[in-house]
Image 1: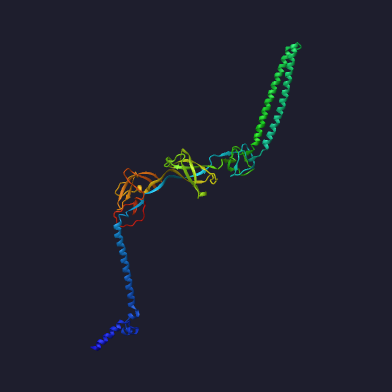
Image 2: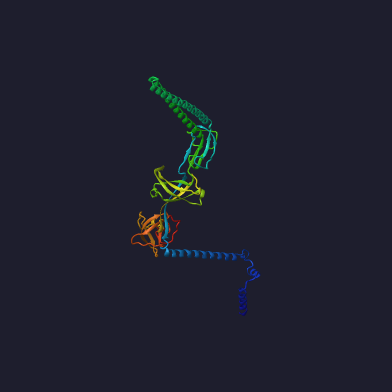
Length: 436
């Protein structure tokens, strides 16, 4: 008995210690698992299984918590809300237009001729009377010389006629004195008077011819002077002739186009028929141009044309605005992005435009946009009647209707949390986005 107990005790003690490789080999000399090391692989598989079980249990816990808390707070998250704010609301109309000069003065060639010289170029400022170009003046100069020669000959004829009249007048007087003394007959006096009248007539004809020749000299001088084209007004040269040597004339294209100084420009924008009723003369506008994208410029509505502009089925009306350009940064032809400021409400109680369109699923649609839905602390909605004011497209000014109350910070519903369609339950759901 004692020997057996001693062997068992020895075996128990040995089992508590890690056996040596030789002992394990002696215990299982022919066990094939020693070569494959199967006990270690089985331990690794058991560890992997435990990890998967723990991960699945964690996921299940998260899902359960989501369902639990989602069901308890679904009422609060059923709606998307936006607070009531105090804002400056500006009602605006946006349009695209182009800058132009208020007026143009066209300078054609006054008479046919060859363009010999050009004194100014496009883009220059000119003063009234400043020479612009020169036509060939050979023919006009010859014409003036001939007219001046004719005028000199006419002046000589006037002098001869004036001398003849003086002689005839003297002869008539002498005949009259001799008649009084009875030295000549009455017929001699009559003949002297006739000769005097003839001399007077010849003098008048000579003077008329002299005046005619003088007018011809003036016309010839004008045509000679017209060979030099001069600026009719002070302003900015929009376009100018480029080449010399060509034949030009009154029926051809203008040689120069001059506008008033560019300190004042005209901005023309088409406004659709849906917005033209909001536009009034004198309203303010701002605009920008691509050449100076970092700046904005001001304009004022000066004229609203009543003639419609049709493009297919679209109808618009041209609105003209006065633009001051003291720095000269703006040029004719620039395209402008214009914002017409129609009206403004300062420090107004405002809600998002979506709040006026929102309706709970059990409330019929109402096109009047006269009610918003305020979210109560318990997650329920209560209607608040309002009077709608100005809108800038994103926010709308509202005033609580009689007996209603609405304060800054009140949450008003703008849509459903899961999208624009109402949900059947208050539990969790998956949304791909809101269209509100």
